[in-house]
Length: 123
Image 1 (tube, rainbow, N blue to C red):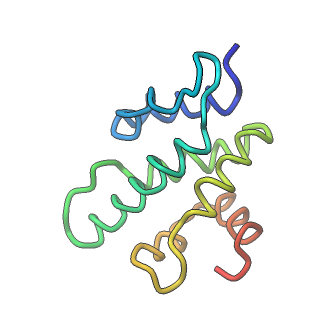
Image 2: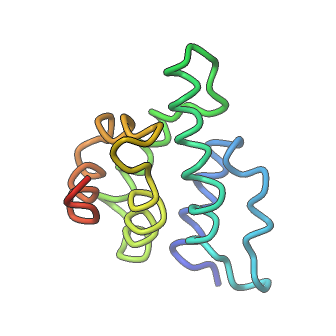
């Protein structure tokens, strides 16, 4: 049976193929998907890289704004498993103040921004 965080991850990969190229690597066993690892290793770095590419005038590999909108919707409507993945393995892994890409924090939609302030009150 597919877990909520696995379904969420698969939906993300389907909607944004650039984020799903390595998704099969994140199965520890046929029925055990490692959503936190997938987000920490693949999703967050690629979304931040897309933000930086656009800031540098290059074409991003993925529409980072659309990804943020998808994550925001999932944070509002998904269950606790999904919110935990978004909070700990996406928001908590975003760049820190002074690091390249930290500006993406200013572009977080409402629910992601709220969760970010809870996860990282100091930025």
